[in-house]
Image 1 (cartoon, one colour):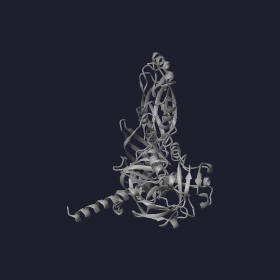
Image 2 (tube, one colour; image 1 turned 60 degrees about the vertical axis):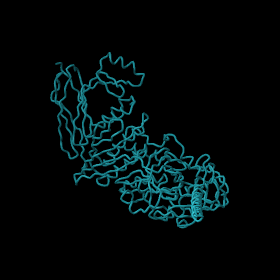
Image 3 (cartoon, helix red, strand yellow; image 1 turned 30 degrees about the horizontal axis):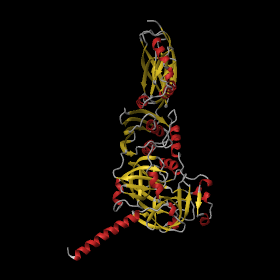
Image 4 (cartoon, one colour; image 1 turned 120 degrees about the horizontal axis):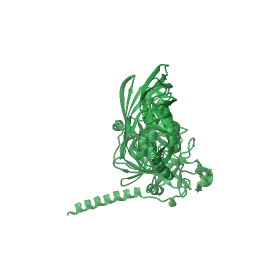
Length: 617
């Protein structure tokens, strides 16, 4: 080979080696034991668009035990770009910081609102990677736990508890120790530790109407999120000129809802190891194992504020899956995103044509019920009345993997019917996804709502039969009188079959679905033992737009595994009584000889009992 060619080949090889060494130097890590006050570092983040910019980081010292035992923060003053005017910016969480080309960690904590200087806490990179490598199950507190009976108030309380379940930072001055910082900032180390909080995460909300937006803002803002409007989704990708593969300092998003609504948080990429991505430097919600879509994000601009400066940003295309949400980092892998649960919602109205909406929500014990709830409530509130007199009829199914579907067929009419019908869908999903029997996966949800902008209610006023002493083995017509909200009388007749062996005094009980459902919950005190039993119980739930008639006698019965068994022979009762210690069998004071349902076009309420003396046949 000629000498000139050999020289060029050697130069090219050396050039490639130099690039490789430089790349390794950029990803080399610096331990917290090497950090000293006075060091100068370089941080990287996006202030506008997709371009990563640098800022200066002045190390002030190390704050120990500030976010838990053996959890530390590097305290620093930031300079450059817009930081002098904005202070630490919401959305900077995860911005990598380098000293002499070595990564020390992620900008992740701030002194909160109204701070005069951009003083930040930096989560050490070793603590980020160590925490994200942790396996294990979802913490018990990081899910919605329901109280019974299932009401809107109980559901809201469950979400409040779940959203406030964890606070991963120092709560009192004695929890934190400061090395080399007190003289610099003029504040006792422990006190400074209690002031530091995770940098707020911009919460991208697109398509939400004001009332639901306020509801979300109230739930999320106390947990370190800053709700913002924004674009997002496939329609916006053409306006977001992302260049090259993901790199440290790039904006990144975590998607919770996509489709006709957008809900997600944004932050900054800290570090990449192959296809592994580390970001934020603090938790999203400290949920542990997760399966959330990881997206690119676009920063429209930085909004300066004395209260809280933030990046106005938007999530974009999915680039991977967020797999861990831990106290010191969120982490995931590049590649295909996780499967979202598709929700199809068709809304028909007496005021116009039907509309169909499509959403995707994350598959998660906490955020699937919460996201479904706000998606339903937002859609109903955007196109129909959320408050005020209105009526919603619902039909549909929630399809589950490996189990029967949950069927929805009901009617709600009240001053808060949109809230009630949304809760009607979400309550069973919340219970099943957080059950203690087995993991339940929701395949899809398909719902149709029929709305009327007026109340459709009725009250049960009277029940009677024309024959005061019906004969056993005969059929007798029971008449039911209801009065609608407009004062109109509605009479329905239902044929009642009197058993041939009936004698003495029987009771005809006529009641609404809510009242009967609560009574049956009290009777069937033996808990369900499997998911299938829970689903069966849910699908047998009583409806608001029906009256239920029961013909009852004083003969005893039993409840076996949640099933009502009435009018049992004495020999069978004796066998079941012997098994009551197992907890699967309970006593039943009355026997149901027959049961009938009277469907109505109204949400009906009321309770009436009629005594019937049966004549021998």
